[in-house]
Length: 218
Image (cartoon, rainbow, N blue to C red; front, top):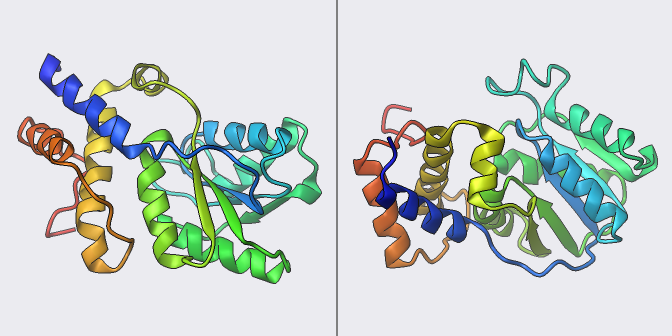
């Protein structure tokens, strides 16, 4: 049973992880690979709304996506975009990335090799990874403007889509830990973490929502 306090703390983390950037047209939209085809759907929606003339999908496979996306995350995202009416000429893929840093670095190379002039990036991720993706991109691609985006949904809607409330909380806690420790490791720029968010994170850790935390032995 998840306590009322734990849900309140989870909502605090959920709200913090989202950047709240106003959408605007960008040079390119980059969809970060994951288990969630909703990222591809959102990228297509934004493309059709004129927010980017070109889509890049990035991602290999992982233990959590191999069964569902055997051809690789980026390939499955591209196939979804084509099914939804995006022309193939408007989609590039990057199929080697295995983490967020790789997503940014390798997508940048793909765009450079394609001769695409990039001054701004519409960076599309899962809702709870907006801030992590933003902080990583600001570190690795500092000369472009980053606009964060994700599928518009509430925490409750996301829990229903995943069908595993405890896993959702674990994922939010893990994403927050990375925002705390990765800047010192050079993986992303530091983000201000309000005291109430840090306190919520610490309470959730004490309650055992720790399956997605990085430990000293990993």
